[in-house]
Amino acid sequence: MKGNTVSMEESHRSNIFFLAALGSLMAFTSLSTDMYLPALPEMQKDLHGNMELTITGFLIGFSLAQIFWGPISDRFGRKRPLILGMLLFIIGTIGCAMSYNISHMIFWRVVQAFGGCTGPMISRAMVRDMFGINKAAQMLSTLMIIMAVAPIIGPLLGGQLLKISSWRSIFWFLAVVGVLMLVCIIRLPETLPPQKRQDTSLGNTFLKYKQLLSNRKFMKYTLCVTFFYVGAYAFIAGSPFVYITYFGVEPQYFGLLFALNILGLMGLSFANRRLITRYKLDTLLRAASFIAMVAGIILAVLVKSDISGIYGVLTAVFFFFSMNGIIAATATASALDGVPEMAGTASALLGSLQYGSGILSTVLLALFGDGTPWTMSWIIALFTIACAAMAFLKNEEIPAG
Image (cartoon, rainbow, N blue to C red):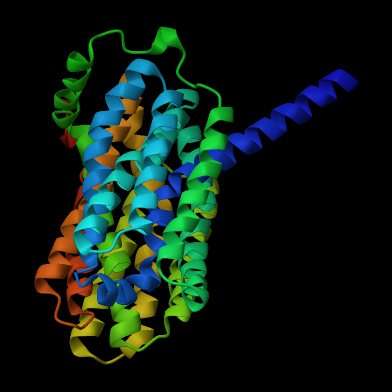
């Protein structure tokens, strides 16, 4: 009995470590972007360039690199790409800390993203390796609760570092975090055994993207979460200038306002773990996307009419952003469930479009930004409508291609 108890305790500790490690890996996008958000106005003065383009550069690298890493993880397993990716992330982050003009910063942000993208992409594939659709959705909701800590701590910590040092200290801190994560990755188990790996050439493996793009059911869920993230990244990239520059919020307090939305996301992710056992994933996805759409439309109306100030923006954004806790988990689980034999490649394509959507967001903000919250607001409204349209499309109307 004593031996069984010790074994169960070791298994429990192993599961906790596994969840914590995957949650931290999935948080890498948020941590790499959200932590330096309070520093964007200062960096713009120092590096003499449009800082929204540093987010664009990161998202370009993050989205394109997943297309490269996905088939590799299906061919060679999950751990080796994770280790190589984290090494690249560390190198890119050090480059960011040592940049002295906008061109260098954008370049190193692309390198940082090329490595960092392996974290969330391969984490999703590892969950699909080990669990069925409902359990995978529950696990993804749990991971989102863990990863939601990063957007809360990131801007707060970044704002505090700015009080005692320059924006460069933020990237040095991220480099140290990267080293710690590398140690954790080495301790993770391999979830894709050799007998389940793709035994075809990498060239043929890459051709699986064509199959996925023609799979209408897979693309329905992928586009649903992609459209939502266009709006989410419009808020992430636009909020520092809206809150700090337009509404006059102090940089060290920006993180507190940003954290309100993450608390909503965490609450919905926690509730989603129970809701999944009572309702169909499609039902939850439609309800969440509908609420996000209504919140986005209300936000645009409030901003355009200029009748509520910062409080109206905070309230509408809270309801919109909180829905991420359900939309991302249910759409991702549903998308990957239909293609378990190529979960790494499918996760890569989903992640590439999901995070690549931020490129569109930042470009639209740069092109149409007028110094007010309006551009951010109409982007959120427009793409939450598109998200809801995908969610309400019935599966029986879209045969798998």
